[in-house]
Length: 633
Image (tube, rainbow, N blue to C red; front, side):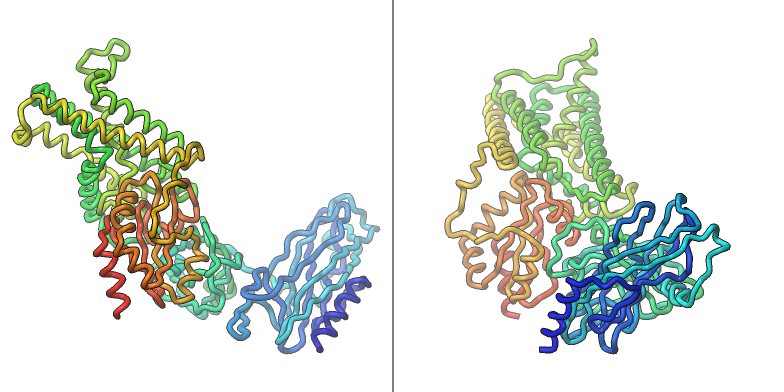
């Protein structure tokens, strides 16, 4: 009943403006004040809204947290007078039941810089008019509203300015304003449902350290924040909000240290803009290079790459070239692969520097790129069917030998292009390390990926005895070419299907709905967290229609009868993160699991906060064993 009377009073006062320098409402005494008695034309001075609260009551910071509303100031426009944004002193955590808010108790002074034009004369008086709204809370919350004004004479110069009794309060508040300190840098990693905020500072005066985000949807405000010392400063672990949608390129807010961030301990709060980085995978450079080399080798067995490699091998068998010439052609072919891999790596690093997230195969998110690759594969398929003999013409009168090298170089580029929708085992870890480390390290890892992709043809050219198992040229080569042509034709049809999905032109995917399969929901971090909080096991499939591995795993594993049955019996909620088109939320979700390529399979067991990442090549037994093992623990 008491709350009801306060609300009636609020609405009555809302219709009867109070024009005064102070007002009493909602258990709050509010004043519009300045620290000086006059202003100088062409200068800037400070005014403040001073909230003095009854015991046990509080008002809110710019991000109120789990509940509440921030104070607002609406200024009446006056020509020649420009009011700036509110400058917020750092708040404190306010715990009310299960909720945590950010705000102020007892007294809070919100500062606003005001600039007046030089056209004002010393004989004039300026009048600042404002409408203040706020929410004061204890066990209940009561809105407050007051129209306040402040009149000040214009002084001829700075010598005519005198400070008043509020000067001490203004100085104290300015000391509590968060500052940016250039020597203190920060970064953040999203790993599963945890933000790991790293603050690099030479001073380690750890007191009570609390992070306050500017956005209200990035962390769980009531969750405990854990701080630990690192060799470079501090790491603060924060629980990701269940309503977080993302993506973020940087985590922004203030960090308060009760012992201060400077040598004298006077600066308690600093402003941070921490760029979001990939999860750091603790793999050495040499191991990452080895993984990249193995992954590149395995890529040669992928459906799009194998026919291209086979064509090169057939040329070796059919033409019996001189060993030295063959080897030189293989090196040019390898150079074409390396140059195209380096170009792709450079583009990834440029996007990373620009704050964008991208991963292996991201170029297939472009319909134009997809249709160009489909055209290339179609031409290669026609060549294998014998429609015409495909060769690279001599350009500018180049000798035939040079034109042949040109053809080998372009073959290397084509090999890289058609390999990019596939991810081989070991590649995911290697490429994540590559894009999360300094660029020079990343280029080294990408180089080994290219070497792995080029190595089989280089070895066959350098050591012809390795081809001894291949029969002598004959009719079998014609049939093999037709088989390879059929494989490439299937790839062309698949790419046209992907193009239709991306553009909506002739999209046939809606007609393909496996009967009695897993029920997939569209991925969102909020939906995943909701399912986990309800106690369900959660399975996430990050996939794309242009990803060959993804499609193979989907048909052979995720549509397997036993897997579908286990999902239904265990009540597992399945989410599909479709990366066919660029989706920044899914891209960042991949980064949060330390991956920048697909497929990625994530399983959250019931009542568990720790995600389990499955390999990129999965089997029905692998999934069933994992589900049954967790269920029976």
